[in-house]
Image 1 (cartoon, one colour):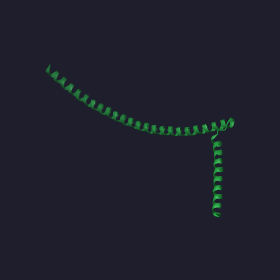
Image 2: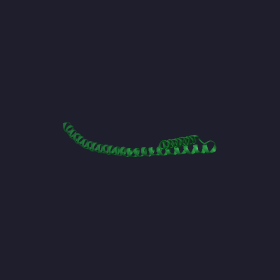
Image 3: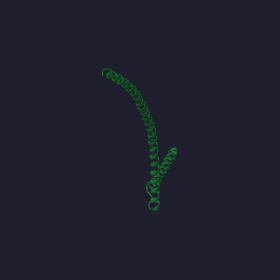
Image 4: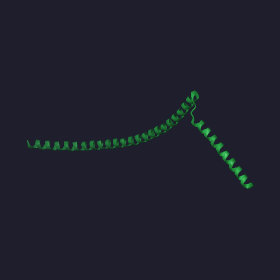
Length: 122
């Protein structure tokens, strides 16, 4: 019987503690969820908004840096390809110029030969 009385008292104390803790939590929750009004509330809201925007700006700056880096490496790669193409065209033009000079000399020699034959026929 003594044990039962003691267990009952312990249960009652635990229940009382639970209820007072729950009430205190409810009170703190309603205070935390309730937004301050007046100038303090406006300042707090503005500070929170600025902090959020600052964090978002930092993220966007990171994205922009990544895009710029990718663009720079892409441009460098493209510039290298353009330089290669330019060298190939330059080499082709030089080769064609040399071939043209050789063909011109052959044609001039053929013209001289034909002119000599025409002169002999007269």
